[in-house]
Image (cartoon, rainbow over all chains, first blue to last red):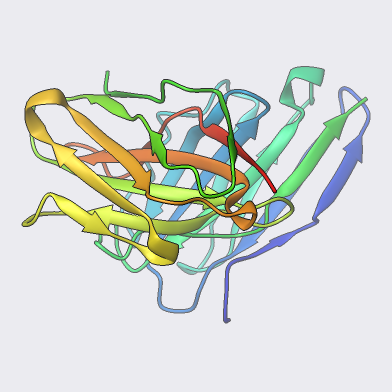
Length: 115
Length: 113
């Protein structure tokens, strides 16, 4: 596609429920990244995928968070048993390859509100 | 662990004023440096980047940044800001040992017309 597409754009969920956030990267981009943006906290790295390599999960805040990337394209970030502190904007970005000088192309994000 | 510091949380300027936003990083090796901008209601977009060569990098919309290796800094500058520059600005660094960018906490710029 022309850009990085994320869905849903907004999600309100009850505490304790599971949520799935979707990211559709730019076609041909082999690297895909998930970040979390909270007010005053900047962008917190969560996980990244590079081609067929094992993902770098070093940023995931707890075992309630997981992500997968199917067929080297679409990625899903899953948060189980959501907590109020999970409320944030979840951003996805893609690039041609990890560390390329093209930089990231970001999606518009999913605003998650846990009530 | 590598980190990125942006010194100013919120900067308020009048139109035509000069801008300098500070960015420092903590890593002693080779780095790639970026500035991203997020206009109100829009997604993050790349403003400029440094990989190698001339340490003075020019980006879009009249922005520039200077990489000073000895100071571990990559400050963003613009000689004369416009109201349309109102946005949040994020500095980011990539080191050789990591595949992802590390972002600072951002600086919100408000330009008064």
